[in-house]
Amino acid sequence: MTKGDAAEVEHHRLVIAGSGIAGLTAAIYAARSNNEPLVLEGTEPGGQLTLTTEVDNYPGFPEGISGPELVNNMKAQAKRFGATVKNRVVKSVDASERPFRIELTSGDVITADAFIAASGASARTLGIPGEDDLMGYGVSTCATCDGAFFRDQEMVVIGGGDAAMEEASFLTKFASKVYLVHRREEFRAEDYWIDRVNEQVEEGEIEILRNTEVTEIHGSPEDGVSHVTMIRHPEGHPSEKLDDPATEKFDFETGAVFLAIGHTPNTAYLEGTGAKMDDAGYLITKDGKGAQQTATDVPGLFGAGDVVDFHYQQAITAGGMGCQAAIDADDYLEELDRENRAKEQVAAPESDD
Ligand SMILES: Cc1cc2nc3c(=O)[nH]c(=O)nc-3n(C[C@H](O)[C@H](O)[C@H](O)COP(=O)(O)OP(=O)(O)OC[C@H]3O[C@@H](n4cnc5c(N)ncnc54)[C@H](O)[C@@H]3O)c2cc1C
Image: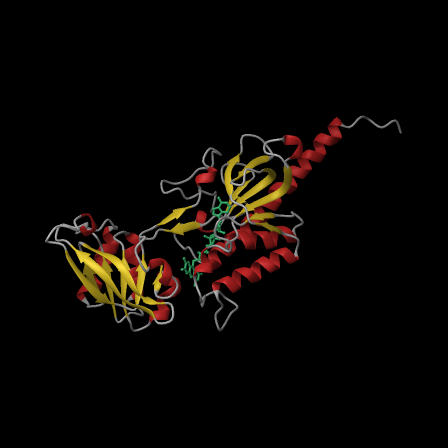
């Protein structure tokens, strides 16, 4: 295969970008429909679930299952039915003609009749010491997933938008107390969430630490998070005022730190395809009821999982959308086959018989 040489470009009936729950579920269904999917794993093979040691809410595993084991099982299942999985990253997709022309970061180019974007969303992180080492060991980006592991402990939630408010409110189910840490005085969350959190502040379930930032997370993978270091300045954004004498630094004991500073959908490679995205970059699909719910407004391009869904962001919902996308892609490909057969019949010379 040579770059850009149409004669030698490798062609696939269906290419799936992403090897998280959505991509692998799509691959299982697509392979069983004889669409011979090629899964391109991206830079995070297995997706976000590989960051968690325990998944307790995925149906079918009464004792829970580790994230890596769950995705490895799915990958094996997809391969069993004929899916090909390659460690490649999509750089761009050209949807101006068919088949789709897909450029990989390796420099290779492949083509596909249909394309499923299952490239997920990456949780934003702070880039502070301790964060990477303790991710999955007391540091989490998903309260719904991990809150129950820290029952009866004091928990820290970092953020100032709707997600942070919602997570802080949700975690009161488990926490002995939730500390909501926000770097400014004012929250940018909707009034609904601010009112709800304020009610829980009055009930003593949540305490708000305003004008405060976490600068380091301490602990070990064996024992989890022990405490965090915070800084505070009365006018907010303390990390920008480290030399100001009004900036105070202190340690704070906690068993869990939840980062709720947003997600970035992995859709940059789809720019230029004409696929509609919302202001945050999430892919917009047809949705609603009936067939083709995962279709984008580019025929043959489908979206599934966290790359579309900014709200539920769960393994089971991502898997459900992956299944839908594979079925929608199958319908599209069958229609394409019918059209091609009809064109061939028109083009074929009449028989002498
Ligand atoms: C720490 C943590 C714990 C969690 N725990 C749970 C839990 O217990 N239960 C639960 O239900 N949910 C949990 N979640 C949420 C769950 O992981 C996600 O909802 C789910 O993984 C979304 O699946 P996805 O396939 O849509 O995307 P992702 O898992 O984000 O996968 C995206 C895939 O796309 C690939 N990709 C990205 N860009 C490209 C590209 N340009 N080319 C090719 N591939 C690309 C990536 O490499 C990756 O393989 C957790 C999330 C986190 C972060």
